[in-house]
Image (tube, rainbow, N blue to C red; front, side, top):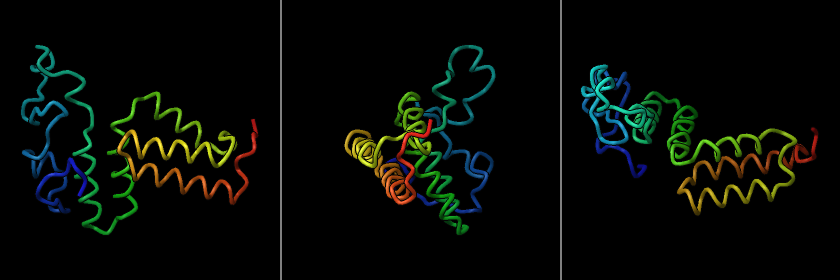
Length: 146
């Protein structure tokens, strides 16, 4: 189980989590869902950081997805949980690199994957980029097209 996952595995009966398991919903600074009110926002007690999606929330969604046999969706949520550790600039750079014809070589994608694995603790995202590198090589998508 991912490192930020809750102790109890969630299933479809827990969905939507905010309604059925509100005690499981917390912001990145630990604020519970009940404290995220308009009054708290207006008084400055709640900031954007409290409203951002957390790795735990995404991992919970992955658990629910797995419980109903949606493993592909679960994998997307798990990779998204890893992406929360990346800056917006890093995400956009990776996005640009993954567009066909943008990466110069397989090695350029593999370098990104290794950095994600080593420096960002993002093995699932690294695996995804390595898979893309193999596919792009097979399909000849490394040539500069633009």
